[in-house]
Image (cartoon, rainbow, N blue to C red):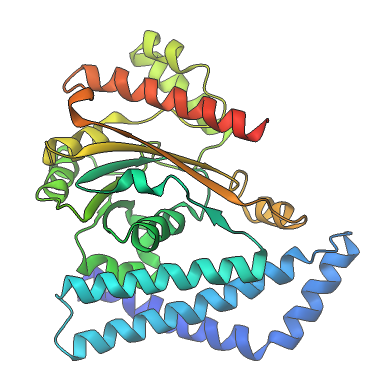
Length: 324
């Protein structure tokens, strides 16, 4: 039995069970969560809202897995067009559920920077929802097809596991002893990107937090004190890891680069942070992006300095948006 099959034997039944339990216990958890919120003076009922989104997520996952099974039965599991259509439906429905249950909406006026492809998008990573937001922007707003670089831990999500593995994505093993195989996979992933496709990577490698920033800068300082000093002004983003982004660009020499960041999801990297955020009416999440022509992106040793400069600019833009 393969590791993929073992994982799905656990994750898919657990998903269906969670959806059923959350649904039949709605009267119980709504009452308990409301009492919990009101006792803490959270009159917008953030726990109720979060659990309501959890119910929507569970059933949308069930629908996604069921549809994926139907495509397999119809012999269309290798049909990328059908899988991308399912991904577009899934991301759009999840964003709609997020807006209805929590009040979080996303404004993506600069999404047009992604089109036409091929493009490589380097995204800020600030919250648990970043992958969803980028998928919604790419598939619904500009009607393009993404090729993702995601951490392997996300395979616990059945839809990402099933549909994500049918599409040209790479689930990165961040603990791999030999990074050369992972980088080769990223070059292969980007090879052949078409005019309706975008490669997506989160160069920070993990969700941003102050202690992670300090630790990352310390590690960089041990190897390259000058680079650490250059990146020291970062206040919101983490220092970027250039190897993965460089590998994607090497795989598609004609792709322009899009640097993307957002504000509005800051602090949503923990359960407590989410509840605090939902305790008051959240402002719209603002998605921003700039496109850089490929001839303006240096290759080789100059790429790291270029990426650091772009990241410092994005960090300054985030700071300005958070402190108008």
